[in-house]
Length: 134
Image 1 (cartoon, rainbow, N blue to C red):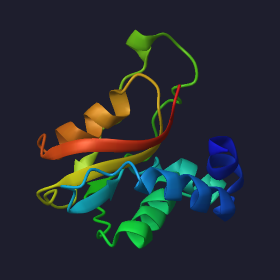
Image 2 (cartoon, helix red, strand yellow):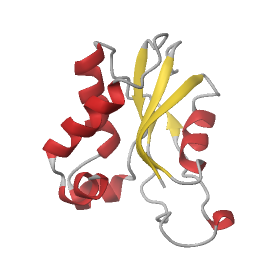
Image 3 (cartoon, helix red, strand yellow):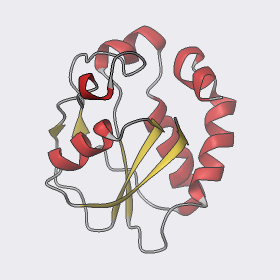
Image 4 (cartoon, helix red, strand yellow):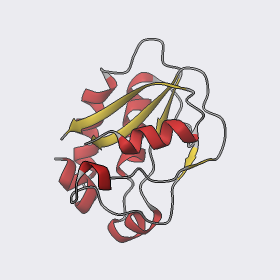
């Protein structure tokens, strides 16, 4: 399902995954912060999966979506290479993360991307919700 969202921009998948993810958002959460896709991939595939999922989570929970992170232009895919080679992308904080922010992403493998997102926000994120773990 994640593959269909990432590479085919299937909105029905975002609805299904996002609804199940909304149930995992901690009760103390005050906002959802999508972990943005590299700009070239967003342009190529026509979708930012985390943003789509965050929108569904927001609709289900009434939490605001805060686009606090700016993505890099590109970074190597995490589907190949060793764990040591899977360096996280270099995000830039657009704005401070609100208190009670929860990161939203489509998939987590090593956690490098979530760590990079949290670091860019100064460690101000209390949790992450992902569609799947690999």
